Length: 261
Image (cartoon, rainbow, N blue to C red; front, side):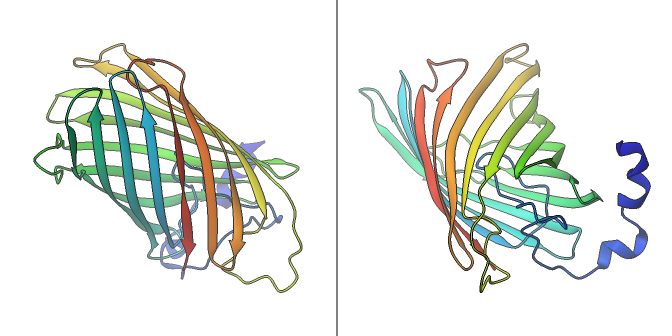
């Protein structure tokens, strides 16, 4: 099936500099919705403001993050992530400050009516405050979006991340199933989401390939919803819970706003 589509979907030399335009739905009208914990395959211009609360046996962690997704052309862009974290050990002191800055150059390498594939490399820079552990890492990988029909979509991600400070490497993966529901598009603004309500089910995790965490598997899940509140703004809320290693993280909540510009 996909072998017959690949030649027409691969980027040509002229495609790379084609001007950017907002893409909130596929040519078939299926919404392209941002997942919570998986980068989108589409290259867009969005600002995410996210608050995350996590509770475990050993500590409580809160994080506020700004994430800027900036398209340079239809196929080329980058992401910048800037977090602020506060960690409180059970019965211990609270530690807070700015976390590591992440820069993610990316390119949309394949596009069809029902499938998108983007290559990216996440570069983590050691900018964390003195009270937090800074690290330097690089994670080349792929993210994809697939239209399953009936306004069901699947987003996925896979990467290999190497941490230079710990000299360790791990595989990173993610899957997100999203169901979108129709709404009245009368007077629809080009910045608004293509759908009203979206339900999310996501699973993300890591597998240690070498270093101190060689062979360790960590996975967590999210159940949530997002909604196109008005032109250019989405709101979202999700509940996260551990699938493995509950001593480090049991459950938590994540919420925030997405601004399309």
